[in-house]
Image 1 (cartoon, one colour):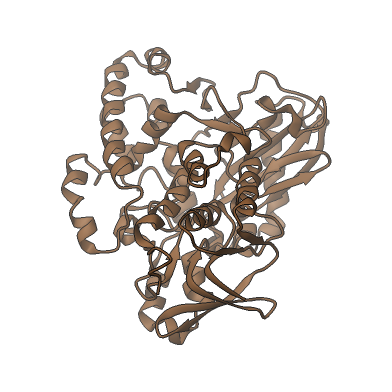
Image 2: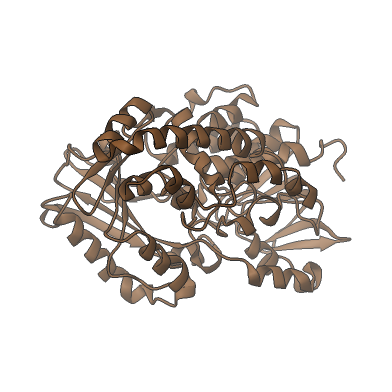
Length: 494
């Protein structure tokens, strides 16, 4: 079976890459190891509840609309996005609350209640975030960083914007109240970064959310995934599920074919891997083909934190709850140090509580609520025995929610299950069970991130969280957008 373009993985990056390649005229086949598309954005169904496995937030929705328009379709015929307000409700350990919204005046009114002296500081921070967005996102999110020069030419602008400082440090230059510092610095955690370490270029997330809002897909994020796979079927792209790729065959320093676990060889003019590059280089390409230096590179990469995600349903509803709630514990910097650096499972935690039935009751049986609670935890380099620790950790989280934001939870619980960093490592093939691939620190950004086009094999390309520009739905969709700049037209493809 000969195909011009083979895409490995049917996550957001792989599906978007397949649409873009097909729009340019390539015959395409997508190979997915799981029994459903989506990758991290898969769906779990249990006892009448539907749970998004991973991403629950859609920002920069134009990136999705653009994909459909490339082949003459309207995305609204495939899925429906609705705005969420507030974007996030942030609950502090001292009992105070902040609704993170898109409207600046509503933000200002709340900031004034926390600390009137921070109002002017926030206005300056917002303008600074917009300037960072104009360069870091508008100008660079779909530009490949394949050469050192690509990095050097933007260095002066990054220095002028203070991007050598961390997100938390930059926020602290403008904001004095510690709770507000947390409100405006937690966003890097959404893409796997420690706010105390990642470059302040990630302040662009604040302006991205301000500009386009935060949305939820009715039916869950899986409705977007299935809309994309339906589109691919309509335009002649085969998406083969349950077809893990075991090897990329290399001939004359080019990716010549992929081999599936079933022993099938599929030849290719080009290969796009929507897979962890450390897994691709380390497991799918033979050591003699990838070169010794690549092993050194793979060993020195730093990875994002792990994720513990609990899913549960109740026979009781909680109408006062926001769609998205960030529950911050008593520690911020020290908790993140436990997770990222010391790699220990702390006694306290901060949580992201997702209540999708607040917006779409169809995701649970009538009169019930479905939830997803996420806790950042160390990745599997910690050595934590999650088979033993996971159930007890989930119990601790449920007890905390029962005693605070979801009273009566325990007695109204009707279904529950959880995933740990082991799921990310074993099922999603993410190195060290990292929730977001490699960590987005400065030394692993832009040119220093895995390149969108392999420097070793010119017809091997990467999309997904670990390549430029990075993790998160907008970042991953943008990695596919980069392909339009670097993949040759099919009539000149080698």
